[in-house]
Amino acid sequence: MAAAVMSPVVLVSGQSLGQIKLSDWWWIALLVVVPGSGHLVMNWAQPFRGRVDIVGISCLSPLISAVAAIPILSQPLTSLQVSGVLLGVGAIAVIAVRQRQPLESPVE
Image (cartoon, rainbow, N blue to C red; front, side, top):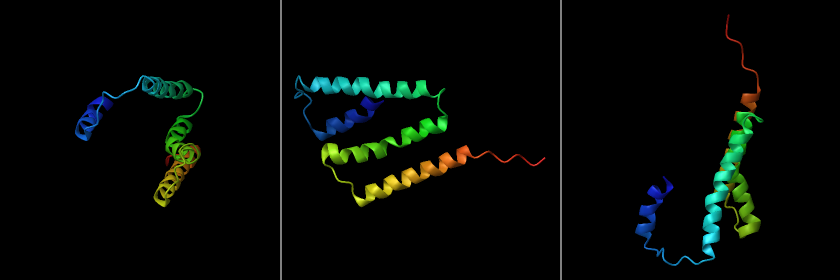
């Protein structure tokens, strides 16, 4: 699916695909192997953790990526990014709190 979506973008961009260096193949292989293993670990963890915990961890990955980009890539966060992160974390917190509270019993 990703290849179907990105192939037209690559073709329109006009960038050459023939300039991949031998050292670049290590990173390409790493991209193929590592993301799939993360999903595998998350699926394996579901019986041991609640689904709300797993979803919360998944939703926090953009926050972790944005914060990690500061020291690793020397990329500062803009106010729009900070606002988006706070909104996302707030939404996750609200959903997690609601899921942890017992549901009201139906009217008998």
